[in-house]
Image (spheres, rainbow, N blue to C red):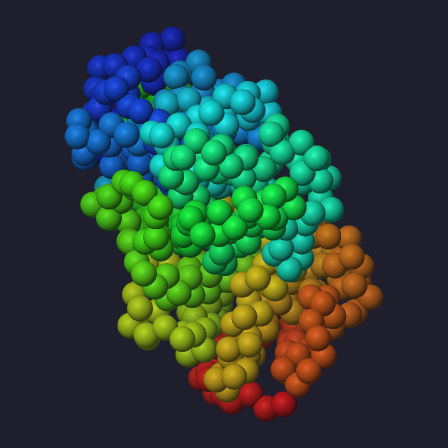
Length: 500
């Protein structure tokens, strides 16, 4: 690892290669690695999170542990393969933060042995998954890759799923690959691998298990029973901010390591990996590298979904109304910063997690969100806001209603986003190009209540939510965003009881 505050740049003609640097300074022998993990979705988050964690594990444990090399499988874009194959799937990772003691750290990551096109090399991937050396199949395929309906059940009407069900031995979806590989392992008397979702879904393992069983049931009920009784799908909490690619990303490897990298990753120093400890067979001892293995993952699910995912969306909702381009710019605005800090207290009061854990997580999150050296666009975070409100924010509102915690601050960012969508503009008049489903945009344009936009049943709780939202809309239209934020940050609003 290179740990530098500043390093002289070299002309492009004098830059070395990532592979040459690895050969000179390799912390473990990649040629001796066996593939123990097959991973679907080798995108930026995976390379900034799980591949990084496995790399650090290999650095610490080699030569005793040579079982956990990774075979990546891409079912969609082949861009990552095209970029990384010429450098033997090595890449640089730079941790960058203005608040960190050592502002910049760069290293070469070597845990990925290969990445293959799963559609072109279907049989190769299935045989790799059926290898007795493979103990883990992991996924970062985003919610769309699971082919779910709006209730998080497998959508058997999905075109690709329907096609896979007709041709189960030549799958094109991650679900299809998992089921066919588990069938082959059963027929060859091999223990099933553990399937680990590392996607940003609530109870991701439970969702994946349900989808796999639904798919297997369509093919062979006995296979579904075998998977139900023998395979495991632990829930995980994955946490690291890995922004979309920036042009400046390419400067770090050249400046810090004097190499040219075709696909560098730049991320924050912080990472968290919490895994439900229920595996079918062998696993890496991730806890030795800082991961958390636990029998009860629920507190960690609450903390991540509410104090990072929901807060991210809350800030983005305010930022689009304010016309702010980057998340760190929004959180550094005094009115937004104070409001968000108080909002976090409201959320903590409504969350069934010990207050000390909430405070510790809040203390970590605020500097991360204000990291100006890792710019994350408001547009990226604000995409699909309606879905995020339903997934992350509405459960908070439900608990707030039950615990009689004020919803006022929780509702205000939603109202700010509704106004931006309805007007197609920020408060200053700049264009806002909403990225949401047409039905959501239409409903907002028609002035529909937030409960109708989210498809919620009418009840006393949703009536309270709608009432608070209408009041917030009136306040924003009457006083403007910044004045309303100041008003909602007054002590009198804090933790006041909800009335129907």
